[in-house]
Length: 89
Image (cartoon, rainbow, N blue to C red; front, side, top):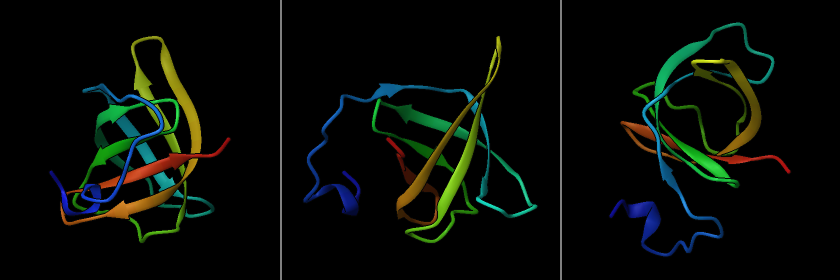
């Protein structure tokens, strides 16, 4: 269990995923391609060594076989190897 999960109860079940994701901080020019670890209706976990700061608005494109799937969210937590994104409703 990660430190940020010790006091956290999920609202939506997570599904493991191993697709690539192209993300950037909203309005930034720099894109980062990382791997998606899991996803749910409420958010996702992105494996990356270039995590954005907590609270940063994020634009994501899940790179699927049928084309990119866009989503927007905010960084809920981050550590040295991953970050959690809460999707905007």
